[in-house]
Amino acid sequence: LEALQKKLEEQQRKRLEAFLTQKQKVGELKDDNFEKISELGAGNGGVVFKVSYKPSGLVMARKLIHLEIKPAIQNQIIRELQVLHECNSPYIVGFCGAFYSERSPLCSEHMVLFGGGHDN
Image 1 (spheres, rainbow, N blue to C red):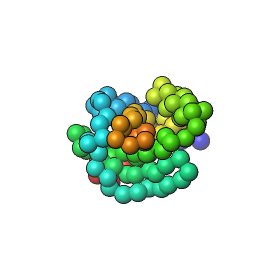
Image 2 (cartoon, rainbow, N blue to C red):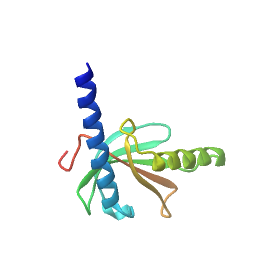
Image 3 (tube, rainbow, N blue to C red):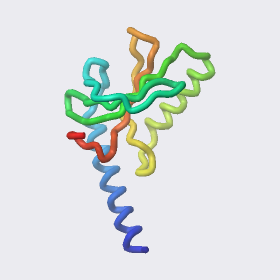
């Protein structure tokens, strides 16, 4: 059991290091830099797509959040995005960033799809 735990901890550490390296390479997120691959799911808050980030080929999940909502909900979304931005944990999805598009009332949130690599 102890050997398994050490192996998992090492894998998690390597995964986190790989994510942080990838995150540094992403830079500023721009709407035109994403190519939609497929829809992953949808709910009350928005739609999640599997996308490719063109500059690096990194495969991500892109969540489009509808912001035509009450100010209290907008504030909650902003707080959650701030927490995701500050959090680097092997237990939480790798958050690359978010931005608001002037073209539509959407917030675009981007996360790395672990296990997806560059080719899934």
